[in-house]
Image: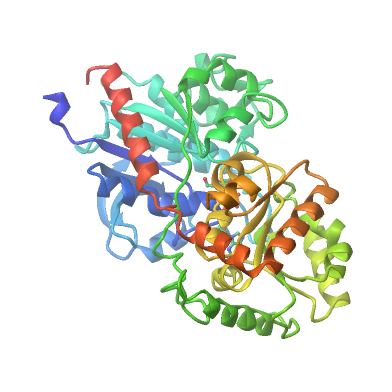
Length: 491
Ligand code: ADP
Ligand code: GLC
């Protein structure tokens, strides 16, 4: 009886916390599969055997050996477990994955020249495991792909014979599309007929993401607002036509957060635990953060924190443009990030010329990220676009009201402070628009006015801390979606 079969899901990803992380996709891959399992699904995560995965997953069994295909080398399929206990399939292919550096780039920050093969192989294996010719007995009924790195999996699956899984393509970030020259098609062994407007072709090139968006049975993205924004310019980033055309197959499901790793009552990275009834203790985290970043020890100067990748998306340039005006308010700034070299230099320069007022750390630092969430008074996120965003949810949970640009998932997850939302106790932060230095400053000023009103501020903090950002609700939405896809087509 098909209806009684377990809902088996192959969750394909190029990063998963805590093993390999460059951004929010890793947080999602590290927690959504577990939340789906807690609700009864049978999930396997599939990812490449980077050195961090091979070292981080101790016990591994060999499931199958797969022969080469096109220019994709042969590989082994291994089975292990993610640190949280979720079963993991590893694509072990030393010539493609066993090298020092990150998942997408070498140690100098340059994209690997063979990323088409590296992620082509991930997609091919994902599709193979989801079809009738799988080399193993475990079969997913749902193939769930994430971002361009797994975008070709639904394309491969389309050309495979026999019974197969239904596919879901989740967009975490449309800014990265995996576009390669047409010759990639034969390199990764896709049939010539896939190279069409109704296929993987994109202005004469091959696009991994477009392949996924075209061939997947359903598309999701990580917030309802971003699902609407990407159906038009400019946030559709060239794919708005296809996305609008598939609007009845496009759903926004807001991400959750890992409420165990991000919990001010038990966070091992912060100076002092606190919760919504012990909020005054939060001040000790502010003092610890000031001391760690060389900021002046001053309780009465508001401390604004910001953490993220230094890319155009995140709008850190706006903070730089407003820096002098911000510092005159006065506020202190605590910034953690890495990426664009010009932004890194500019922030380091800002810190040098404003000692005691601006604390900057360049690099990736999990502990400082947590300390900023706990120690700052206000969290600033001037993202140009933001499919979902996690930091604003962390900050609400840490009693650090966010000031955010009104875009994407920030609109769905932060409730703007207005007389109405204050009255009904729903206000949790401050939204600003348009994306200009003036509007951002106005947003910060609104937050500072509220900060000076101690009673109002406590209320905002408590409202944010009381919100449920756990994965439960989102996992339920994904399960409903999977179930509805399976109902469309008897297995
Ligand atoms: P994105 O995926 O676009 O980078 P998200 O807000 O979804 O944005 O997720 C970013 C994640 O990466 C968060 O968990 C954030 O704390 C973390 N992060 C980003 N930059 C750094 C950094 N320099 N150090 C530590 N953590 C970081
Ligand atoms: C992306 C987006 C971010 C989102 C994350 C996880 O990297 O930029 O907004 O939260 O994916 O879905």
